[in-house]
Length: 273
Image (tube, rainbow, N blue to C red; front, side, top):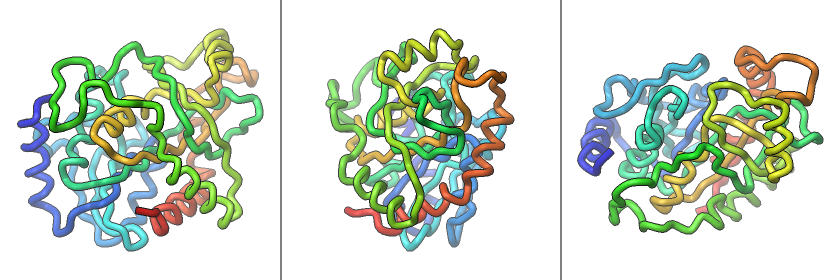
């Protein structure tokens, strides 16, 4: 995706808006309910935006929702794009570049993931402290646009330490227990084998999913401050004697939606500059 495509998509969305959003939100499988908490919403279907892909996964509505959340101007992706859908890494991360061009300075990226850490349980919320890119690809491969970010971006402090501490304090204030850990990004769409889960745990992973890493890489490249939150929707293969299904993911995110909504809303309300 070139700069012209980003600018065309941005111009289209900008025409619909009355204010400049400050915070971006990417809402994962079953977590799009947060967008319904946005006041004075303006919705823009992905299919209408030039150069935007379309979301094909159950639990992803496929639209931008722009408005006020707890007094902050936000733009939310109600549904995201995945590498396994057949999109390129640049297509998967295209919306992040558009949101940056629209004026956001921070981004909260959420996902539903499988628990690898044996201390986790389905329904836990995990603050992402770091990630492992196990996708065999990177959205920054190819020509680099210097106005978007430097050729070799530092990835040692991708998950903003101030935001992480803020999220911990918000969880404590609300009495919500949260986990913390390393998120592993796999391509999908097949779930991992038990042997792969053991390998990922050995490598230091705490949760595994099929998203987030590409968007975080591009967010870091463009200079956005990042907070990542995983909903542990199930335990990864081999940890429980049961098959893994997407229906289970949606069911678990439904159960935890109350805590998820309260936590993210409180984080947004009091997010430091």
